[in-house]
Length: 163
Image 1 (cartoon, rainbow, N blue to C red):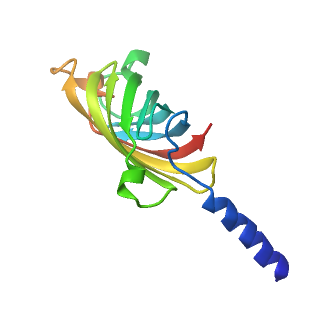
Image 2: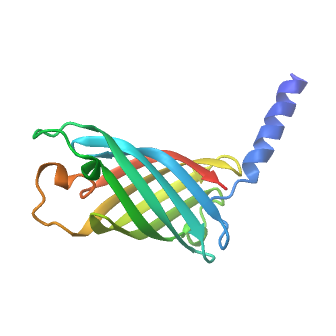
């Protein structure tokens, strides 16, 4: 019983040190699943802290499973890359040091959009995240079939890492 209590105390101490966004110099890597109408895939994002509440970065996504009729999508229909800008407001909301909320804008190969995300860190190096994004201005407003991929509402969920 003493060993169990000791282990629980050590683990709880590691949770106390977790911090979702540290400000300037902070680097986050996120890997997750992306879901949108007729497609699911994988996405990787990286964010670099420029100030107390500002970060920039990029994301790369690839759709693995597509179910829309009309043939087989090409690589460029499945692939997307974006430049991101985030306003990390977890400390402004004063919820918890382990929790961060970040609204942001992104400029990608298919659109200019906005996203809203949240991440929670269990330890100093590992956490989970979720994010939802929408296009604000599409490069091809008459997109049909596979051209709509990566150019619509998207939901992401996955793991977040401090680097």
